[in-house]
Amino acid sequence: MSEIDNLPQGWEQSKIGEVCEPSQYGYTAKAGAHGNYHYLRTTDITKKELNWENVPFCEISDEDAKKYLLKDNDVVISRAGSIGYSYLISKAEKSVFASYLIRFRPLLNPKYFRYFLDSQQYWNAISEGSSGIAVQNVNAKTLSLIDLPIAPEKEQSRIVEKLDETFSELDSGVKELESAKIKLTQYRQSLLKSAVEGSLTQKWREVNSGSIKETGAQLLERILTERRERWEQQKLAEFKAKEKKPPKNWQAKYPEPTSPEVEGLPELPDGWVWASLDMIINNVEAGKSFKCLERPPESGEYGVVKVSAVTWGEYDEQESKTCTRSDLENDNILIEEDDFLFSRANTTELVGACVIAKHVTKKVMLSDKILRLQFVEDKLKFWLLQFMRGELGRTQIEHAATGNQASMKNVAQGKLLKFAVPLPPLSEVEEVQSNLTSAFQYITNSTSEADITLKFLNAQRKNILKSAFSGQLVPQDPADEPASTLLEKIKIEREELARIAKPKRTKKVQTMKKITRDNVAKWVSEYKESSFTFEELQKSFQGDYDQLKDCIFDMLSEDKPVIIQVFDQEIDSIKFVKEGK
Image (cartoon, rainbow, N blue to C red; front, side, top):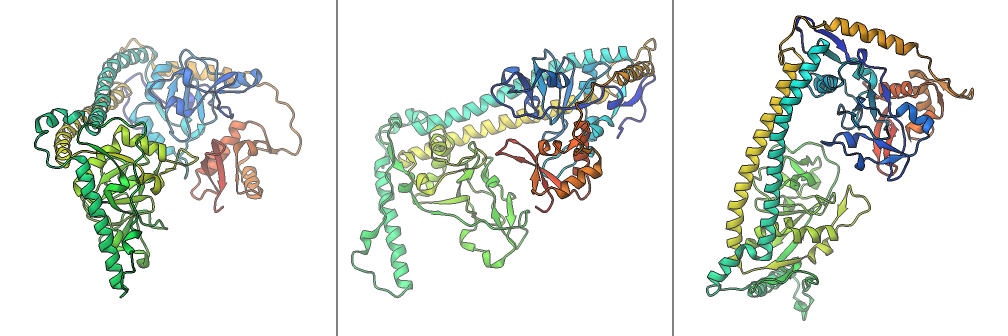
């Protein structure tokens, strides 16, 4: 796995496992708000900073905790999910680490070791060594075999000192840029808020109060009239197609639009009026979801849109699946340029995402989760888009969204039509669009510049780490004791640790099996259920449970694994599913 062929004089090449105490898997427990030990998980170490106040707890006996107790200079590495992420423990609280972390205790400079885990050489090795279908993973054996360039002990200290100094300056620049991006996002939200509440165009109203030809109330009246006329024209066309004479009082069956629910909403400026979404749209269209090929359609093929196509602010037709049945192809629900699309199902944060489709080149049909709203007055599309993305719109969306799981919320069409929408004069809508378009362009340009600089700084970090672990960051000192001497000391220390007697284990009942790859595979094949947890597997085996976990990960890494691992949200834990079940 090594990327460094020519190390400086005095350096050596070793393996992660050769310069640490024996690696160890974490403790399996359920995290909660209460317990007697903090319970450090993968999600805690993948954040930028570890805040012990946000780390949950677990229940564990003091005797069992001795094996898993975290100490300063421990390094924990995530073996599943966010694989490869690591954290150097400092100022450790009373805590143990979770089963999807692996602990290494380096016998060399711990910060030198931790910095290596940020290097591209390490991440390339992780990419080569990761496996798993549903959840990628690496095991302790894979991590232990990763090559690690070893500098002389004193040079390690100089490298760490230089990296601390350099990265302190670099991190300051990153923080400033990320802060600027947050402020740009806040500025965008403040613009949306001021636009839909009327403060953005307050001066415009004062200047143009005498020249507004149509107020919001008059605009709504015109829309409602045209809405009814369209319905009547549609019904007459249906009667004609069926060669039927319209029945008496057929116009009385016109479905009146839902009135808006305005209780608790802010007072609107003069000339504005509240309308329900139902009042200003003519129709809501949806498609169907069915089994498709998981790739975007090619020329001549039909596709079905995915919710991710409207998630990130612009329509992305690449986020679609290919329809394989000609009888399901429907030109009437193909997405077209300038369509207003609304995601009725997604996570709490993303449900209700909407876009106005641009750059449409593929034949992509609506799905049952992406709705198309047809407007009576098309000039209101931009206005409604900004309203939906602003505070007033998001509040109504999140209030209307239902569902037991945060992973998928749904907005029913009936609730959607009741949304209260502020309606200004159309001339004011056009003024808002002009102001927001120019402001959004500034925000987009500024954000792009920040992103480019952040990418540059990230590349700088990688280059600095590459220099550090190839001996080019700090000068070598011929007087330094060579790395071979350090490795010999570490070897002696590891041998001494291996000689320390292991604590006696409680004798297991004879029915428990010895841990081998074949025994574990046999247990899986004979297990009656289609899935199992690690705790269920543990009950049938005796010996080192870290060894048992290695067997499971070896099975997951096979070319044709007989099990896959999935995250079960109901039990908030990983389960292993027998292939084909």
